[in-house]
Image: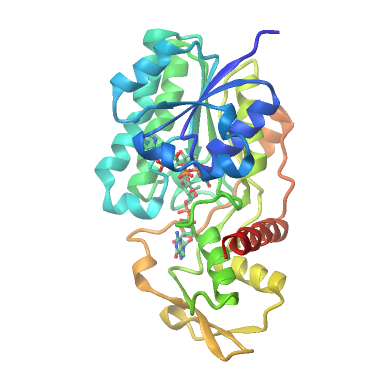
Length: 342
Ligand code: NAP
Ligand code: F7E
């Protein structure tokens, strides 16, 4: 059988790295794109030992010309659009850039597919953030969207464009509505990795305390390595459809911290309320976590919990890693690389 060629935009990100690893095992030829600076930033691919197996191209999602150049150079079978300004917090400070990259970037790729080769199959990285201030307690593919940030609004634009190109131009487009997924390759600005890294530093006397924002927000957290398989499965279906990928369980940030503390067998105690909430290390009597209001968002998503029923029945996909196991995977790898560095 002919080797398939896949384009992964956002190859330097968490999902780009795991998806590349997954598709390489399936014998795909992979072209990975990123914006100009990214060649310096391939630590994830290096950690997975796959950086030499990928063909790199520069492709800034704001530049139609660059997108077209890449699409003319290769004959893609599948395109996975993972590139985005993906940090919700930053999207409040840069709504125009977020809309241009996370929203309009999707349309630029879809237009290129329509013009150059409408037979290409397209995956769009949609997000549970689109549910925002949730209108149903458990979110399904039928739950109405209610976005709360420039990031979520931009993702919703990309999502509906993907649906519209499927319906209007008969292009094979699928959107994976992925709930939060984490791993040792998660960016350090996201809360799970920030907590894991912070605690490892504190235990090594490299940091006195960690500052966080809203500890009460709840998220449906899964393991990123498992989620990329669902992306591929969506594109292999006969009929293009959109799917939620999640665990069906939800935990607060505070509960995530508690799982870390349990795994580390630390003796700690929560004291205070609201902005005065603190986590004390009872062995040293020192505050190790406190609140800094600068990490609160102007508009918060308080609660997310999805249903993976459709993915289970159509894709035969289910989540396998519990939050407790995910915490263990993240902490163990954080220690491993911390020790290597020091
Ligand atoms: P990530 O680690 O932040 O990676 C984002 C990628 O996009 C990086 O490679 C980044 O390059 C690239 N990028 C940013 N701006 C760009 C631009 N202007 N032009 C071209 N590339 C650009 O994100 P992730 O966690 O892997 O997530 C992958 C995708 O899924 C994103 O679209 C995200 O919004 C979406 N998503 C993520 C989650 C989740 O929980 N992880 C859930 C739902 C949806 P640099 O390395 O140069 O920054
Ligand atoms: O925040 C709260 C914060 O930045 C999670 C992206 O991958 O998933 C991710 O978006 C929660 C929020 O992820 C801090 O207020 C408290 O309620 O880890 P996060 P996110 O915003 O859920 C979705 C599905 C995506 O699509 C996005 O691309 O944690 N929180 N204190 C904090 N968050 C951060 N980052 N830092 C804190 O100090």
